[in-house]
Image (cartoon, rainbow, N blue to C red; front, side, top):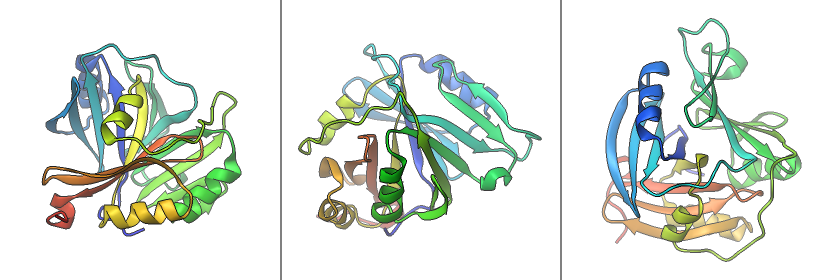
Length: 238
């Protein structure tokens, strides 16, 4: 997979934007970058995350409660932290600050609770073409992604690809709900995923001249956005 950026972005949804903005700005000390309208009553507040972007999607409509399993914790490298510091944001999302370099985390680590570790080994090793660090632990660019069996995790049934709008609507719930991988060619990567039998979320679609995106799903159905952003790759295909 040809990456356009060597850092994986993280997307969360909330109804409590003021509390989350204060937490990530003041407690975690992430720099605020910009506000983007997403549509459907959602606005996205973007924070710098050591090369990644933390995308806090604020919904004006009430969100369902947190869903068990899936993306369950975020570790953030912090040279000012002498030992791992567990934290929870106001929505109850788990995160920790870790000393830079500890456990090989020099940027961020995304932790996933899964139904079948072997299926995820194959998915991240073959489909995502990530570097295997150890059992249940991979590196995609500079971002570490790890997973372990979680009795609360649930595997979704296979379904046909939907529209990007429907996918975004279906992932709305409190908590960490998707990750974004920036690539050089969204259409080429999506065709490759489809040829490997990867579960599709949404086929590629252009968001004006800003980005071309699609969605795939991991073996349990967790969403992964595949994004070709013009600011990283140049003009989008017509």
